[in-house]
Amino acid sequence: MSMSVLGLVRASHPEPAAAVTVVAALLARGVGHDPAGITAVALTVLASQLAVGWSNDLIDADRDATVGRTDKPVTTGAVSRRALARAAVPAAVATPLLALATGPAAALCATLGLVSALLYNWPLKSTPVSVLPYAVSFGALPAFVVLALPGAPAPPVWLVAAAALLGAGAHFANVLPDLADDARTGVRGLPHRLGPGGSRAAAAGLLLAATVALVLGPPGPPSWAGLSAVAAAVGVPAVGWYAGRTAAGAGVRQVAAFRAVLVVALIDVALLVASGRVV
Image 1: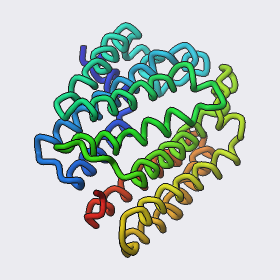
Image 2: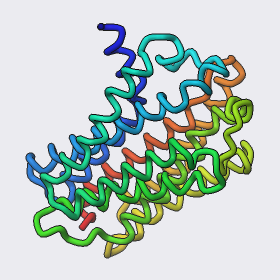
Image 3: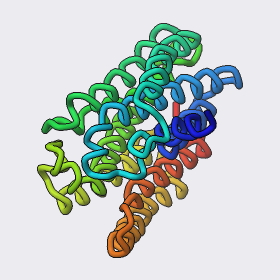
């Protein structure tokens, strides 16, 4: 039982799930949610992340076994496919139900983000529009957080656009370590068509564009904190890609580029919230 629980935790993609949930909670605090609202936002986002992570490992189980992904619990037998299905379905159902506590408009937006992410898992991952679900789901996140406020105010366009750009960049960074394995199993998303060099350039450009949108979008001149975030959007990915190359040379899976995206996202939101320039 303990191995199965640990396997479920590992199969949930815990790093991005935790990072996205923390980002949502920080943003909720920044836009003015009370503790109950922050909790409702965080639980909704966490349920959505769990549903997406578990369904991803379930759908990809055969491909992961083919390429020998020992970092996947379902491949090593630490968790069964049946357990993943039994966990993913309730998490997916819980997402809109939890979001309803914040209002129908917010619940609709949260559901859109979840459905888009599930469509990436199947069938859009292997298509030229594989980046689209990332952009839609990430863009839906701040929209949900703002719409969850009393009165359901309209989310700022610049905030949604910045999140969509960040999500698109995350897609290219996330796929980089798996390009060769994906090619063996017939996955041909947009990053695979662009290749490693094109995907790195796309990830870097989109991440920088997202940060610039967060800095220039709010009214008033950009703050020094915002300009620092722009610098971080340039420096942190560079360090991540260098670390990834070092890991590749050592025969270790390259996840540093995607972790760099998560770090920049956390920096962006923290600085944005601290500046008080969200809505």
